Image (cartoon, rainbow, N blue to C red; front, side, top):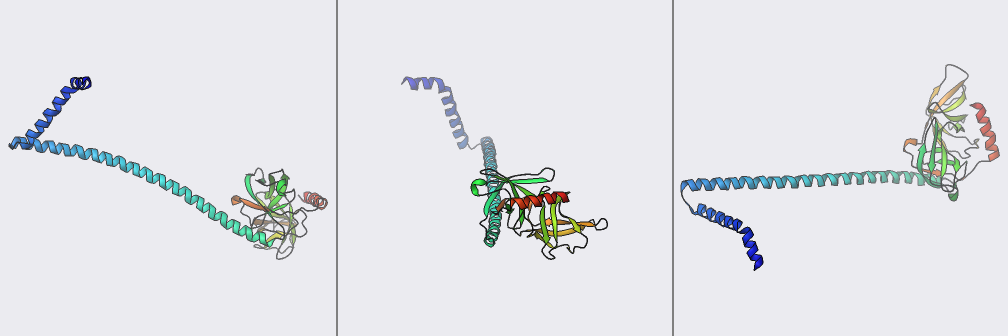
Length: 277
């Protein structure tokens, strides 16, 4: 009872006001005089406008929230689509790689590139396989298109590869069509066959492969194709610019060929190639 008494004492003015408002609205609704009818129409119109305003405001807020939710959903779908596209590209690459793997008599070591470094024509890539997986220094590295490079440093779990775009890597190659031999190296931003006699018949478009005489890469692997011949008008040698078959800018996975050339023969060839530089 005390609670009801205190409640009445604190809110009785508001109670009287509500009762008076209800009585006033009732009297207005039953009154038929023209003035009261105009007032009643104005009150209802005002109420309708206010109600419409609040409804529009609420609808606008709901619409904004729906738009934000749609934008979030679109962003999530975009990310999912990007992942699916990347997975499709990876699947295609793996299919090609598996086809290549079946053509080799060696049990290739599949590996993923985890980083790359390129400074002053010294491009290297790091892979996530090392001694524990059978990777050794000197092993050729390929993908489904052709030669990538050669392993030159190995730890237990990782290996570093000198790619074809490394000026320290010099390889004996030949024209698949004519059989003419040459030394391939990265020079002045291009892969080149250097010191090519002017009597050679290598033409633009000829396929270039590793020579069977090479002891650095002792397997015949495609490298690229002849693109243009330089230094034609002067000197006694030409240089042939070679476009690589491997797309180094989008390279993600490689295979290591588990063979190592004779160290003694390789050292002899390396010393010979250094004299040609």
